[in-house]
Length: 169
Image (tube, rainbow, N blue to C red):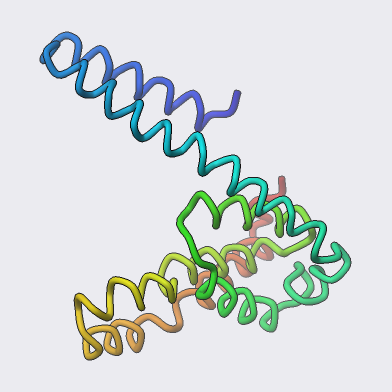
């Protein structure tokens, strides 16, 4: 069991007990919502894991290292930043994909740049939500103010790893 799972189990148990003690009438509704969301996730997570793991069969492992591996430097950070913006889907697709690509040889700074880019620039979210709701002026201002953040995150990770040997495992 990892620390994240232990923390989540403690939070789930604590909130269950809090609802049971403070508002027992709401427990049935809370459990019903767990069932609805759990059912949705029970379908999505295996599909997302399958898609992410399938990448290993389409992209040769030896192709990852030169492009976005530890030794790819700035080029890899910039490519990972660009790629991250165009990955469609939510965290159930993106994080298994990032894990798979990392296990195939992508560098740590490059994965950090990829995830930062996906978080900030997901093109599908910009086109589907942000542009129609906020307008082009807002979108252009936000993108102009934040374009440098994914490469900066990758560069800072690169520096921290080089200087302090962080994240050696």
